[in-house]
Length: 283
Image (tube, rainbow, N blue to C red; front, top):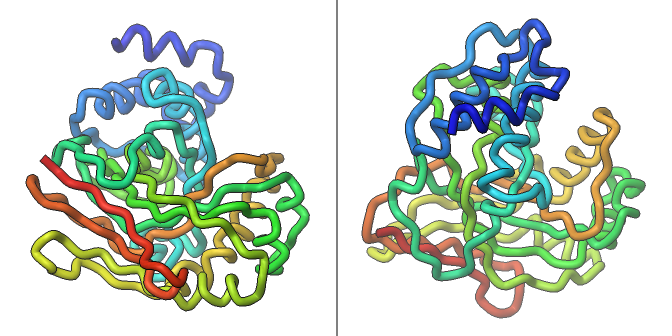
């Protein structure tokens, strides 16, 4: 496996940049992820650019096993979490097919990853490329989103310690698996914009214990503001959103440990007239 992973990086020019982890180091991280083993953090990275450099290498390796890129994840969408990682803005990673491979009610191993956790999340799907010119106008952005989707993220925090901004980027902001609920068609109205901000996102388990609760505004003030950040962040890298891409726009709970034999449900109260939720069971 190691020989295969390293071979996949031979042609990548950024692998040799001074503060970017080299191909061998990124290959070891990829192996650890695929083998469900914790990995030590990278050392020597001095900037977020170094983290992005490592991320690009890692994604190129993981797509062999976890599938093609299908969109983006935005992490660190609240000030307390940003302070923990020593950055003052969100960060982005790449969603691979494995991150949206499971459906509501799926069962997964409690030990699905090296350092497996669960998080309340939320997806949006891009309708068309016009979203890249929508600016920061929430309603204008919403006109280029066709559905919003209840979503439980199952990240893998893989590193055995040393978390900081560059290392979080280097592990691609940690997406691994995800459970996708029933898509909700977007209403391109101010009322729908308001409901996205006013909804309450709650995670409960099958004992009735509330594990986390947050308002829609917990993510940068509004989930559509997360999309605005992502558009600007991608533009700085010469990239754009494309039709059909999925956007993971919010961590509406801290990353929480999993227990085997439990069912976890995330509810989105106030988003629609009918109850909206998504569940996963662990074994």
